[in-house]
Image (tube, rainbow, N blue to C red; front, side, top):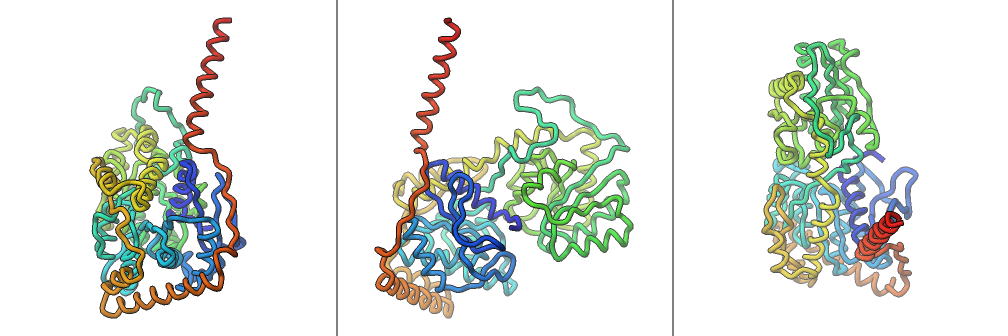
Length: 479
């Protein structure tokens, strides 16, 4: 399965929510050789629905044919909240529509930025407006992403939270990692003849800045003969990189790794000293957090949500232009040679900044808010906390399940689109009534829940074990 940030986000968030005592079910499309029901680590259950994938892991839009399968899963697993991910995921949009028809609470997480002028963005934004006009709460991975989503879907900013991505820092350790208790040594300096390696790991598409990379690499190597490039990734722009290498005879200075699995990313990163990220648009940029955790100095473009991700001492920013990319990279090389950057401290700092446990706690608060576990006032009081990231904020249970209220919200989505959306909602409701009559809930077996120790009980057991261990050590000393 090709690596995607949204996949990693869903898996890590699900695992931490399970640790906190929740039951989590993932519904996605089938992959090559993987259909039906699968169990992952920690008892995470995944339904692979056999729908046709047409482009970049996006399924063919079916609108209504997914409803019988989805309803069966929801009833079988006793689902209460449906959480969709990705503006371009047809399964996500369809699941939220069907969930609202069934009277379930819904949450949507947006991971991307989109424009407003090209045809693809216009269609995507209209589809997003349809889905989010009837969603209970929305989560974005950065403040820039929030602003983009609010404008695209005409949302009330108060019903959108900002909860960032995170990384498992233990999986992205530098080659020589010092613990937080070790005193930092003197800064490492690169001599004028020492080789500095620059790493690029990215999907090779236009929006990821591959054209900038192709233009900048020959200029950087021309002025810095003791620099080497390591590039990993695949995409339609890979041929441009290969042609650039051939044209400039850079086979000995630029190494192309091709596609790498996510579990191999760390092994590629630790071979370098600088991470170059020339993206043209980015909602968050998880890969630069992974690079900093590996002890790499980050050179990145000042676009989207990237400036929100890492502190200034870990990054060298550039405008998304060829000249600025070259200048920023050369500043980073000079800083490393002068010993001005303490990259050996980055890992522990990143570990303190980003945690999936924190992401799960904040997402859990959203669930509590929309389900009524938190009162309206409590939900808003939680939003008053300060910090680099906005705390969870939203309206608890404001969206009515009544069909007439849903139709009013859909009707306001546009002169023609509003009528089409209302028609979709009515057909979906009639299909739901038909399924309730001819495929009654009593005929659907309830799945057994994976056995899980209560998190509170677990903490008590851990405390008792520590007390027993302490008492045992004390008795041994007395003997």
